Amino acid sequence: MSQAETIDVLIVDDHPIFRDGVSMLVDKQSDMKVVGEASNGQEAIELCQTLHPTIVLMDLQMPHMGGIEALRAIRAAQPDIKVVVLTTYKGDVQAAQAFAAGASGYLLKDLVRKDLVGIIRDVHQGQFVVPPEIARALASHISDQALSVREIEVLKFVALGQSNKEIARSLGISEDTVKSHMKNVMTKLGANDRTHAVTLALKRGIFSL
Image (cartoon, rainbow, N blue to C red):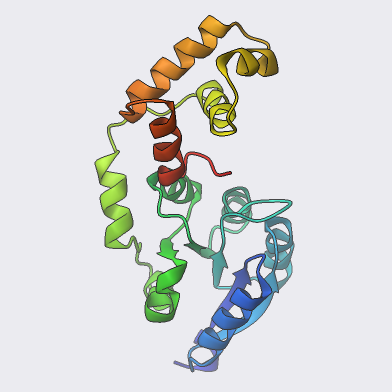
């Protein structure tokens, strides 16, 4: 591959040690070059405007601005830039949000050393890369009914240990309404009880604590 065809990579993650590791891995490749690093989504958007990378490696959970919002903004402004999400979260909900926002690839961080270089090349060649584990998670919930914004709010308060009365006070709604929301949540998630609902929501990436 000639110098003109070098894959320029921007690394976006709020952990410097992780960025350093990924940078060393990428820069060892003769066809790739790290052109910049960002610690949050806002920095990533700004660097994309000045550096015009070929591929952005994007974390999801970051301060100031998360990966989904940044991904959406980058793809809207510069659709030729391809984004590969790197995350510790195996949940199908965050994966679905990432692909809906325009991601071309998705990789769990514990597989970075083994699979990242290949995925960068595949995405650069126009392929859409979904690891089997994530594909199975997406497929298994494809027909599920999504939780509403209010239902997620209620479930977050449950996760924090609040009672129905406390949740009702926090949200300015009645206890009966809280109970109705939780009934819907448990039905949609297939949960046995409140604790199970929280566990399933965290596992699927519906929200994080």
